[in-house]
Image 1 (spheres, rainbow, N blue to C red):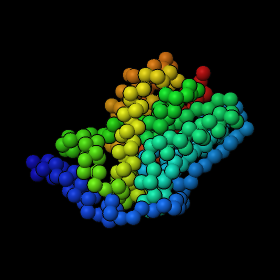
Image 2 (image 1 turned 90 degrees about the horizontal axis):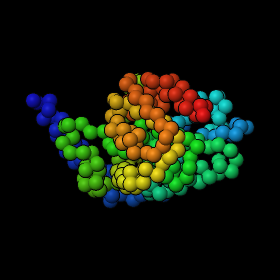
Image 3 (image 1 turned 30 degrees about the vertical axis):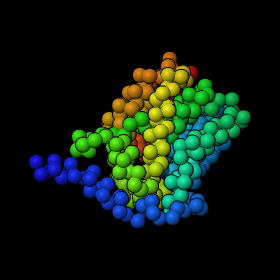
Image 4 (image 1 turned 30 degrees about the horizontal axis):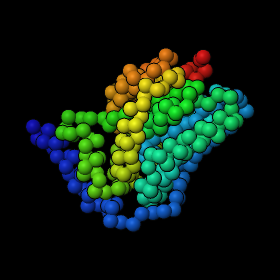
Length: 287
């Protein structure tokens, strides 16, 4: 009983702390982007006719997609791992941007790659998957890979209410908080220790991501591109049910859903990453 009561008050204590910490809305915002070492965008533009655009997650950076990008590149694909505005940076500059800014970065790079390569595939992790879905609603993508896509936040009974509720209510009182206060949802202890991201996570960006999700869900039946979805049932960040929703509602004739068991949210770096890499390679190579 005591354990349950403790878990029930966690969201309340957490929200109270956030509303009083030094990252509150009363503090001035950073305006200059200084990228954290290891969070830089990357490209390996191999001479081939096929390229893959890799999109990282909310509050993350290209560190999340670098290893899988290097693997795909060795298999004969050109790769481009973008970093969208404000992400992977020092200070609180992340909150200066919203989903439309992230999407413009994705769209611009996709259109640039289309001028150089006959075929351009898109791989999105977490919110990168949400952005990839939006891109697929606007363009007939050759193929789309979704890894732990963000359609809903993982819910636990002791949250009392859905996490989205806290984000849209108490969360409006502050914009940012230190990334060091957030859990890194990787089960592999080495990968978790080596994980790199920006200094700040943004509630404001989280709310903007929810706006993007609402738009994507509204138009999701427009998607007809071949789609591979991979999600772990033990994902502590994005809810597995979100991938089930995507799989059920997209209009793609060629679609595949793979369930993982050992990984947490950041599957590109976690215990089953080699399985993830091989499945992605197989999906991209098979017509």
